Image: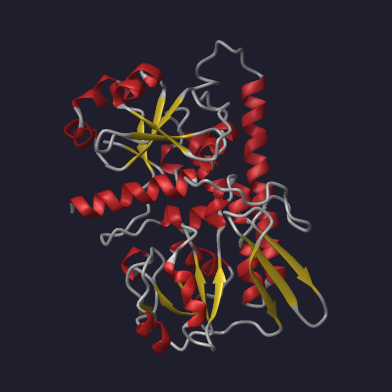
Length: 358
């Protein structure tokens, strides 16, 4: 149980803060609205997808010329499942890593490939997949070698995790759409997500602009994460979660720090810098008593004392799956709306991914 808790926390830090030393193209690619990590070119006979390296600026990590949609796909990340499900293409999935950590119900015929960082290649070949979608979190990731394992198996890199804004991550649905012959549908879904995100953002701006700077209810301050093994990781302002805090109208201590990484702090630093934070999100427990048992110092924080502490585990399974990592990537507007709703004590029943600790 302790190991599972450790893996979950590492996943939270990586997925929410994109804790990398990224040097990927900083400019939005032609044809994209937000994403920097891929480019798509379409002609009458084919769709060409180029994925750029997160570590070497401007370098093409993979180029895929798609003349026929892929019919049988494997993947090593639940975010890929989220994209396929949204596109109505979940029937193309024949194998997935860590199947128990997938929130979306899958057919019994979908093979479990084991650990996402070390896929079971024998099971992968037995799945007769046409291609495997890979998230690679390190430049020397062994999974990249899969492309040389079998000539019939394409390795397609899906690096949405490296994008630092919510809408840029969501835009990777266009890559998956191109792979399964549903690029037009993907564009339509993404356009709707952008419209809804912008609408929520504009309502927040209108609310904030009509309040005075001194009105803490209109400008609530926020804290994220919790202490683990003596280190408390908080997102810098240039990260996925940092952008969400900004778009949701929060006052955040590291909003002006545009690094694209998490920031390691000691508990003492957190107490000094976030003692009076109005809202605390992203903890990995579901009750205040659990939070107290982890570290009594948690109780010193104003957000704990006022009971305004939240986790992102409302949609989870007993096996550890969390829909935040699937639907949340495709629909960041739902996360933004949750962050808007928890600024007050109203409409708590409308929260999608988020829940208040009891």
